[in-house]
Image 1: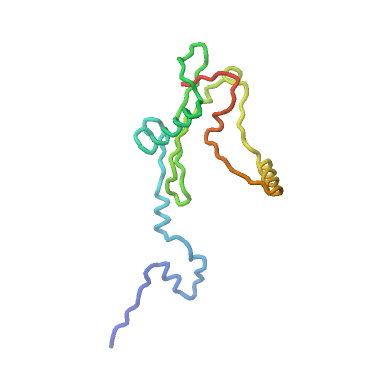
Image 2 (image 1 turned 180 degrees about the vertical axis):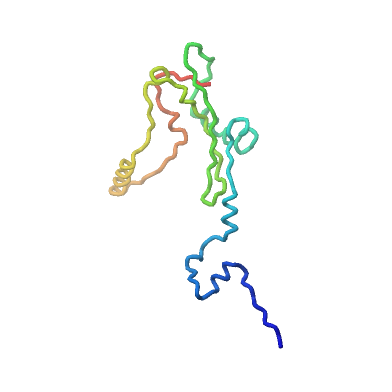
Length: 172
């Protein structure tokens, strides 16, 4: 008399899907648990200050790109610090852009003014952020479609830095 071996399924998921009494339609096309755990335990740490960023080649390259853009657009002129004018500080802001799969797409560094130090009426008279309203965009797209025009999209990284100013602004 021989022994009968019971074959164990390769995984718990396989055991469920082989059982005819179980409706497995919701289990198919899902990630396994180890993939989900791997994504949950990943973390993107961005530098909190220049000293931290300067130790990493990717962040140094991102800061170089920002400085090259500033120089290319001639956004400032190096002068001696004026004693009779307000001077606004600047700081680096770091952001990691990710792909849909969670991998790093690029490191983004922006040099920003510490606007909270400005005083209305002294450093500026008004604030303005050029943002397109959704209904304006929809109207434009409708006109393009109606008239069979070609439409191009343009992303300007430093558009806000190219505004025409009436006053002098000093940063350090």
